[in-house]
Length: 122
Length: 370
Image 1 (spheres, each protein chain N blue to C red):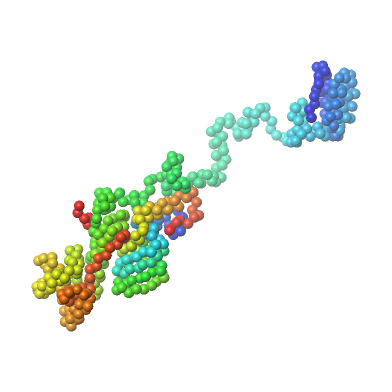
Image 2: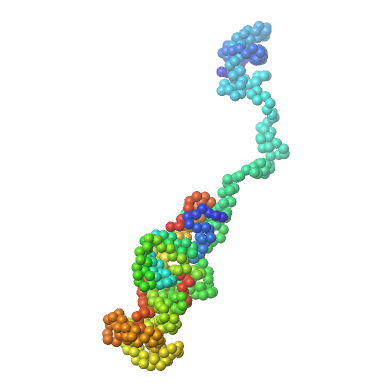
C-alpha cells in the first residue's frame, strides 16, 4: 500500500520505528553536532533524518579533522558517515522516542484510513 | 362538514341515505357545483318527509346538489385536503386516484407484499433478499470497515479510547517498535546489553577507526537497537586523534591499555622521565610487539614510532620536532623529549552529556564490573 506521506514509504517508516533512527528524527529542528566518520564535525540545525540515518543540516559550521572551519548553508551527510550525534542536553531521550512513536501511530490510525494528511515527520 | 343524519325515527335514515346516494349518482353524471350545506339541508328537509316525497326529492336534490357536486368530489378525492373518509366509505363510487393498483384484503397482506412477494417474509429471508439486491453496489460502510482492518493497530482517533472492547476486536497484535524490541533480545549479547540498561551499569564502549581502535566511551546506556546504535548519557570519551601518512603506516596497533598509558604519560611529567630512560633501552628493542612491562612497552612503542619516523626523515627533522614539541606544551624542562612523540596522535578526553553512537563504529562493549 502506497500511502501519501510527508517523507516516507511504509518501508522507511518501519525501519525507522524499529531502530534508534527515530530518536534522531525527534531531533529535527534542533541544533546539534554530528561527528563524522572521518573525524570531522558539523554543527547546525537538523532539517531531517531519514530511515538510513542520512542527515540533512542547514546553517552548518563544519570543522574538518585538521580544525579548519567552513560555514555552509546546507550539508547532507550519508548515514554511513555518521559516527556520533550529540543530543542536546535539554532533550530527554526516552520521551523523544516515545513522542515520535506516538506521532506516527496517531497519523497511521487517523480516521481508520483517511490519509489525506501528510504523515508527520517533525 | 359532516352530514348529520338525525333520526326522528329509524326509518328516516335510509331514505335520506338513499337520497344522498342518488344525489351523488346524479352528481357523478353532471359535475356541477354542489353546495354542501344545501345538501345537508336538503337531506334534513327531506328527512321528516315521507318516502312519498322521495321521487320528487331526487330531482330537487339533483338540482340543488348540482352546485355541491364539485366540493363533494373534492371531499372524495383521496389526495385532497378536504378528503372525507366517512363519506368515501359510504359512497359507492369513489374515484380512485390510482385505479390500477393492487388491492389487498388486509394490512398483513400488504406488509407481506412489501417485503417482496414470494414466500413468507421471515426476517432472515428479507435480509438475504436485500443483500442480494445490493450485491453490486459499493457499500461505504463496508469499505470503511475493510480499511480499518488493513491498517495496523487501528486505534480510534480519540486518544486513550483504545482499550474499549469493540476496537479490540479489530486490534491486531501488540505494537512492535524499538522500545518493545529492547527486552526481546534476552539470552544473547543484546540481552546482556539490555541488562546494562535496566540495571544502569556503567559501560565502556570501544569505538573504532577504519583500522583499529579509536578510543573508549564510558557512560550509561539509555537505549539501543539491533544495529548496536546506542543512546548514552554521562559519557566520558577518551580517544586518540588520527595519525596521518607515514605514522599511520608504521604505527603499532592501538590497544586500550596503550591508549590509557598514552593518556597518563601525556598528563604527567614523571611518566615522561621514565619514558626517556626507556628510550635508551628501547632503541634496541624497538619494533617488537612483546615487551617486558606495560610502561616500558608503552614508552618504547612510542619511541619506536618516533624513531622510525625520524630515521626516515632524517636527524634534522627530529631536532625540529623536538623544538616543535617544546613550543607545543609549556610544562617543565623534560617536555622536549616527550613532545615530539606527541606532535601527532595525541590522546584527548572529553565529556558529553548525551551522545548517540552509530552501531557501525562499535567494536565491543565492556560493562564495568560490579
